[in-house]
Amino acid sequence: MDTQSMLKQMCKSDITDSDIKAICKSRGFSAKEATSRDVFENFFISTIGIKEVLDSLTYKEVVFLHLLDKIKEEVGIEYFERLYGCAESTKGYYYMTFTKRYKETFKKVKSNLVRKGVLIAIERETYGKSTKMERLQFYFPPEFGSFLPPLVKASKFKKTGKFKREVLRDKLLELAGGERKRPSPLSKSDRRSFKLTINEGNLSIGREQFRAKYLLDWQKACMRASIKTDTEDRGYPGYPSDDMAPVDAALYAIAQLGEHEWLPADGLEVILKIFTGDDVNHPCEQICEAGWEWGCLVKVVVDMTAYYRLPDDSLDDAAAPTPDQYLQIAPDGTVVLDLVKIPYTALEVIASIALMDIHNANLRATADIIKIGDALTTVRKEGIFEWLRENSSGFRSAIEIAEKRWGKQIIHEDLMVAQVKDLSLKVQIEKSCNGSQLVSLPDDYIAFPCGVLPAIQKIVSASGHVVKKARNE
Image (cartoon, rainbow, N blue to C red):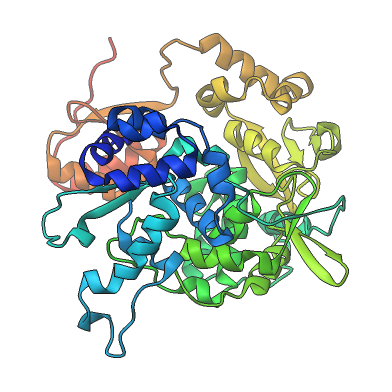
């Protein structure tokens, strides 16, 4: 249900006249809005009084509304347990009715948020929920989000801080046999998911084509794995799926800092409890230190207190070297990349247009017409692409051919096509040959390099079928 429909239902039937008067008083509406539900409905989403009301809330309430603004979903009364708590029984929750458990919670929601005009509250008819308390739904209008006070209580000072920029670089150097500088906290399967490899000329990270952002994902994965509490199962029946693990909540909160703003570790305590839904004391200092150790955060110590923020340029330094400083044109036409200096985004561009290999502990790139053609529209405006065109004869020739053929149908050289009508034979061929060497085409056809033909002929003959060659007209 959209905001307007929910608001219409609330104003029509789901709040009392006294509720409307209380909202009008909190928001500063005139007497006219209080006497007409239709007029009240039109004014509710307006900006009148909303900033003043939001500024009057407690810090925990502000953090909770930031969470609602982030998830942009309706929530039931049980979701407010993380804000106001709920009734407890010495025998456990299962010995209490839903209404009894959340009766006091609802009173606080109604007086502190609904009657102040910051939430839309409706009763939704839902199968299987018998009591009114279970059917209640609350929604924070996205129009109010920009008026919320800041999520974090930041300290502001101009400091550079310490940043372990070498973490990502050390990871990249593993590609050419560099030693691992720090033990990985990841499991074996997770390490495989972020392993840098070159397979048939393609630079990959895990099973994906190399992207600079995947290095950041690896950093965050290492940070998460360093925090034991972050591995807990976080399933909350009936709750939105946006509940965050402690590390993700911490990074999200720190990302809200403005210029020259820093946050001490204990400034995350309330945020983590609200955003995770866990009423426990999260290891905020351990989380921040893990973030700093793995290059996800910058740290500065002021008056014996450590403060943190996100790096301004976690991928590439603003004073990045020029291509002449990290690329070298070899006599055979290949381009040698300096893994110590090359910007990660430049490596991503080169990997998308070249065949990569390791030679004498150096990463090399050879222009590939097919890859250039596939990536032409996305990389042609990149500075490193133009540098390769101007400085490498191999890349220049390949780029010119790709641009000349752009938009035309290209028939690959050294390619054969065969029609295999027998399904079992086709499956046998696919299993016996490298999957990357075969391409399935419509009408039972397959395409493959000429060099694969002898192997396919052998399979066909062994299965009792006959190879028929079409005449080249």
